[in-house]
Amino acid sequence: MGSIMNEVTSSPKKNSKSKYAILFLIGLPIITVTLSTLMFMTGVGIPTATTNKGTLVRPAKQISTLKLTDVKGELFEYRNGARWSFILPERGLCKEVCEQRLYLTRQVHIALGKNANALRRIYLNIGPSLSAPFLKDVQAEHPRLLIANVDESDWADFSSEFTSDISDSTAYYLVDPAGFVMMYYTSENNYKELIKDLKALISRAGGH
Image (cartoon, rainbow, N blue to C red; front, side, top):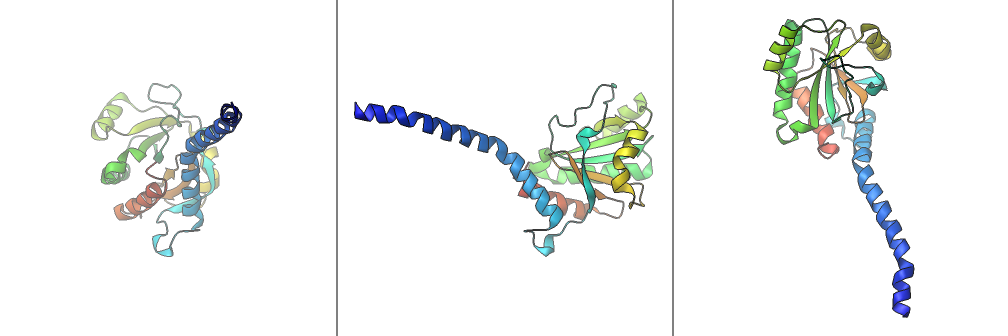
């Protein structure tokens, strides 16, 4: 009888511990990504030999506050399948410099190998909608590329704080899985630099 009573009275404690354990497991990926981003941005805990090659965005901004639409004109939910993302802004049709940037980021994406699913690329069209022939061509060459549209004034308001010191109009941005625009790259950044940054971030976030 005494042993049964002990089992019964200890049950709530066990249930409480189980709930905390479940909550911890659910929150662990978020905590890991947040800490890895903070380490990368502040340099705390990272050897000086592995400093980032991109330029930090200050202040980091939450991209989910930006109203994006997809090619059908419907709401583009940024957080759906959130992961590390390259945001590639472009006004109008993609010309030579834009094509080079798409090619570079595609090769980087492929080079991630088993961690390729931790990254996505988003072509951010600023202004009027893209034509059907253009969409067909770009998606044929870049089948994994996502396309989103944004109003030019909305993008100007959103990016004004962190683009004032960017003279290169070909800048593109790295967004962490929590949705913060944290770093930008320009045409001066090469393949090896992008790979180095991404591998460091993804490995510290446990492949997320």
